[in-house]
Image (tube, rainbow, N blue to C red; front, side, top):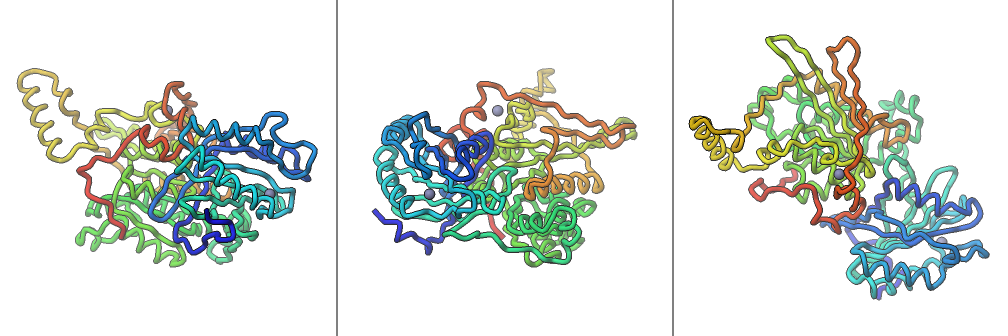
Length: 493
Ligand SMILES: [Zn+2]
Ligand SMILES: [Zn+2]
């Protein structure tokens, strides 16, 4: 097998490790149990997704030590053979990758020692006997200058790969690669001076090295994109299947009449708009929809995802990505209600999806006939409508074939407000400065008092979201939704 000295740095694939509570909280409590002077550690389980560009690893669980598994009498981590064997035997009962995670003393860089090298070389080989064809993961946690610092390396397909980024849900941390901080890049743009004054220099640097995915580049999404670009987010992944139409000009930021005439893809105009705001922002625009494979491949690299589509399939897929791949997200939507010309409701809704939150199904957010109709091909829709009309003519229930959905009206000030606020919450998470204090928020602008709802929605105990948190592709069969085959292929522009 390849030794650690052959650690491959020329490999084009980047490794991203994703962590989320409650497993991440348990991990920190365990790893820092003997802090600040002594090390401690645990075996762990990881899901993974292997894409053409990235290997994503997601913390799925801990095989915590029991008394006697680790030596209390020495300062560094010393693992008893019986503990190793227990983790290996457990791996025969689950499909996940095995990893070992340990701490280094405070202000001691998370850089593998020679003993760590020996341990990893031994374990990579040892666990491949029990869990063949799976990655072996090794992480080191430390506290450097008051900040959580993590390094990681993975043995995968006969190569050692270094983790370029470690991303934790709502917890800013620094990733260390080969003994140095990989992400010390500072943001000194004068344009973000006010933001830095409000949230600190560190916050601006965190934004600059972060990636945000925005699903939907219409009214709401384009407003979120604009706010994120101006705030100095380093990379934006933008996803939308549609081209601009004239009726979008009322609300899509960056759109101009010629875009409607030329039927410019919404993601292309969003990309150009971002570049005109800040050429330093890297944009990855995709013509496509969730849950197409290439779109998932992109979104699992993001720190945060925003759902700005008002589509059932997109909301469900985003919720799925949150618990399976640990990508925190905020789904937002707007609604205008009215009777006889009077506007009785102007509602902005925000739904928080964290890995441990109830999924969209548990929360009853998915209307099954709407979802089914969204996923139908045009030919099937035509057929269903005709069948519904025939049923109606016979006096039968047309709803068995087709539900006419009311046209959802929307206006630019409402979509702009909603997208901007969703972007604000993304900034709060990335900088670690604030958090949406709700799991679901509905604001009605035309009530005498803002009508704010914050229902805590409990998960269903039998739901898949309870069982496969962090399992990534190892729970692909349990995905809440898959993309229909009649959709056009994804295009990156
Ligand atoms: Zn070590
Ligand atoms: Zn659920």
